[in-house]
Image (cartoon, rainbow, N blue to C red):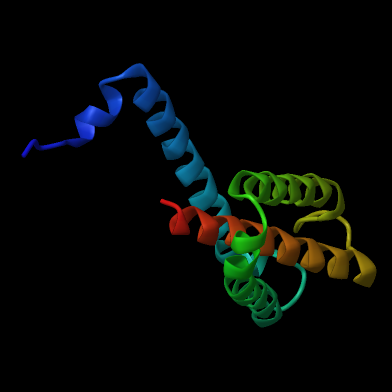
Length: 134
């Protein structure tokens, strides 16, 4: 019986590329998964409303991701989730007025909260699917 170590992942060119790609994917998913939860006090609404929006989107993601996995190919679902995360991030750059800037309107605050919820939903689905197939 032969023993395998972590160094074996980087021994061959094909496994080296896949290992580095999965490390980058893992770090990206973890950073974006925890970012909205760590920034709850930065959004315009009360921290409890922000936490409720992020928490509900994560619960919805956990409940629906296992159903979605059976109906869609894994790569396609990963591309869709990362695309939705990227779109939400770009729109947030232009709509979210952080502290110190001028006052935002109620509709802008609601749009930011909805975008944060979509962002959290898509990355939670990606997080769940990534761990299912790890």
